[in-house]
Length: 295
Image: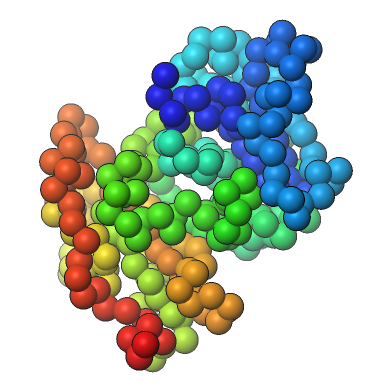
């Protein structure tokens, strides 16, 4: 069984630690006889207060999907339950083979609300991944800006796994980000990882561009290419759909203006992308934030 499916079936579909939420789609007999053994797969780090965590019991539809051992059916059933709880849920975002698997939120009236709130709308300093209000998924020329904290603890992840893209071996093991929406699953192939210090005079304002056309696409991706740690030769143009994941970086920790950014392009219908993954290399001289250039 693939590691990503195993995480969904046994480990967790959702973990928001520190006042967070756990959705554990396990078999009915396991829930009755082995609740602690199942829960041990998602044990929180020692500094968390487990009595403050809120557990969401999977509904019958999620349990039925679990019985099929089909990850897509499981995620779609979970998405339906999340949307029943909070209609601002637009999808589930996951990187197969990692602990990153969360609802994806979007609010028209409270854009930054989920920076410090959970699926239930309750205060939670670790937050939950969310899209900016003017972002969209799957449209030609779209670039969805998605934010999430870098908590730095494996079980309190949010966007912590993104830091792994600093290593080529990690990229080749986890080249695809999956997003499940009501329309189904969409795979996005990672092609860029870079760092930005928003305090720099020449900082790349990557977070303002949510749609491309003509020359602005070339200009934007020229800046991405300049900073990109990865070289994949993945073709892309203004008719493609992109996601841009943004979180704090560890290299510039505690500055308050530090960002690590991962970009991915929606896989085209019938596209074979294995060659882009296998031929990928790390760049030797990506353009770095000023604080790192002076070290």
